[in-house]
Length: 80
Image (cartoon, rainbow, N blue to C red):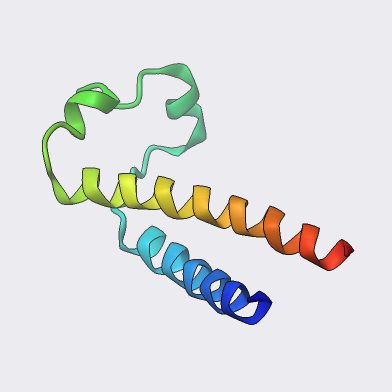
């Protein structure tokens, strides 16, 4: 079971890297993101519907959640 979880963990790690690399760069830097004056539209208006960017964003969130859950499960298994 631990081997299967470890393999799944590695696949998720690689998938996160690939998906983040596929996403478009915002190109406005951290200061624009923190100030709220980062672009012509809001975050929600840019990602409405089923756009490629919206789908990649959702997939990144799901994979990150799985990454965190598997990290905890594998670390608890290592303690035993």
